[in-house]
Image 1: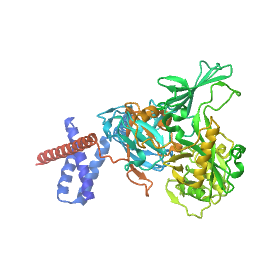
Image 2: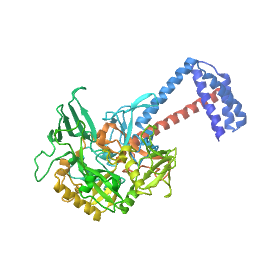
Image 3: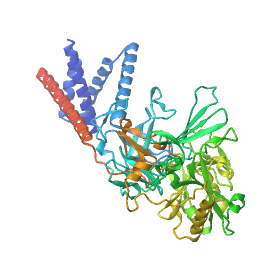
Image 4: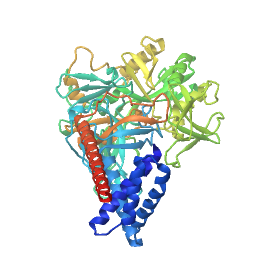
Length: 622
């Protein structure tokens, strides 16, 4: 069968050449004789005698395609340009293969994962520029994973090169957390979305189509993104804008006389913190921490009993049975306006508190432990990076074999060079066996930054603590359950401390915003509104994701498609990514139908053309 197809292909190619030559008035008697003989022998299935005729036809075809050096060069350049143009249009408008470079979407996508991205899920993209035709915004759902272009986003270094020679913009893969017009508020590691109708409330943790993830309103610091505005490069006057979701929530003006002025936005203007009239409704944020639920969360790290500050002992935070202490930085506020004593000062102030951890709490922390993907070499820890950048390296507390590793939900994995993961047995030396090792992995396992290990440092690890319905969560898991005697003692200490110190804010459970009676106006007073025509995009890994918390909501025109298949590495995660189910759009079906129809019409045309040429050849021989 294969032999027949090969010979048949030579017959068809030879017929096309003969037809072209006749149109030019060139007679090809030898070629015509070989074609007639090959046709007759193929009908007889005499492949042995047909082969020499096919070889002579192939030689004639090769001779007819001879080009001068200039002709070959022009043909190659034209073919290359056409191939790149076709590939670019396919990548922009139909589908594309991606390799995930970072861990911002862990555990859905990990470093070195390969995914197939459909570009026609929501409509048809305009090639090489943001925008669409026939776009269906109703198909974009909360929980969909979106591929967006970085063009026109407030991001540094968005340029890249396609095929190594063509300039373009980087692509980002994030999950759609909120739709245009939604009001959003963060509480308990969850995201509450009040729909644009002002009545329908969506809680992402309760959506069965969305995998359970943490939702945190800031990335690594309550300072968020700081933008410095100065009248001139040499001016001593500076204005610092504290931005979250790319919106300024705080403004700090520094003056040459050493005074500062700190303000928050209020009804289109700027006011001093805690200066707006207080009434029973409390219908506007009084400080920066009340925006969007920032005050519901704390940055945390583990310290040893001997590292507990003297202030903690003075305030009565003592527990002789504590194995470790969880130190919390919480309740962000701006510095008070007035004279500053030092030229450098923190732009955002936080309160500090401490919770003692017993053995059972440390055990729960171990089962919840997750880290970034890390590289261990010569007993030093370094963060994995797809470009092998020279990042920080810190020594390990105990020897661990060289390799690439990661923790997720307390389980350690070894990563091969191809990105596949192998689970490690509980006896592997990477597992924390002592409080010292647990504290090391908790404090250093995300940032891989030496200062995270220094208790006196202002740089806190990217670890989040928050209340949810009375339970205290760390790393996305409940470490203290409601009613735990230690938690109850801690809460009592917090309220006592707040009553004695007006500048201290107790770290407490503020309560879920959907508690009865439900008040939609709460979201409009304290929530973040997604602008019309924009989408709030967050990474599945809140500790390590540059997303809308940094660059703001993303315009609809930037959406380029959605991942539909994780095809490498093979394993439990292989297949369709976790997101609301999406059937192909009508535009996709129409596009495939038109493509299939075009291919069918072309194939039928070529078949009929070949049959006509064969018929003419046979008539001439008769």
